[in-house]
Length: 106
Image 1 (tube, rainbow, N blue to C red):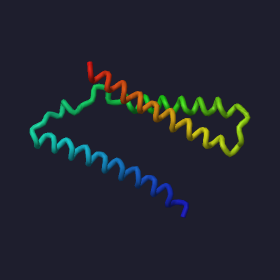
Image 2 (image 1 turned 180 degrees about the horizontal axis):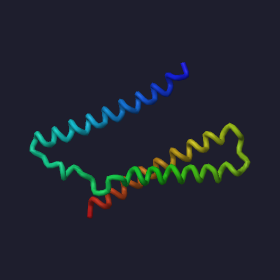
Image 3 (image 1 turned 30 degrees about the vertical axis):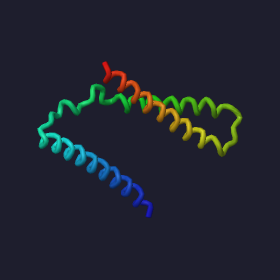
Image 4 (image 1 turned 120 degrees about the vertical axis):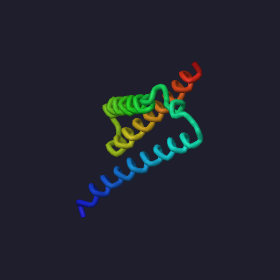
């Protein structure tokens, strides 16, 4: 029974990569069939969202570690870490959206 969890996790990762690659391929082929140009679908800064999200997650971890140094109930420390990661990761995505929108207007 213990072997099923890693196998299921690996299978899930493989399926996610497969369906993502298949969707991207079908999207590009549909653009080409309609006479479109693939150059107009490229983003200027492709890793902006990933970078700012990872920055937000790291900042959330740091903030949660700082806040855990105060006297907090033991059961709420894990919730504090998860909440900080989600809040600051989301803030990273929102800031990436506004930065990309500002850059595309220029």
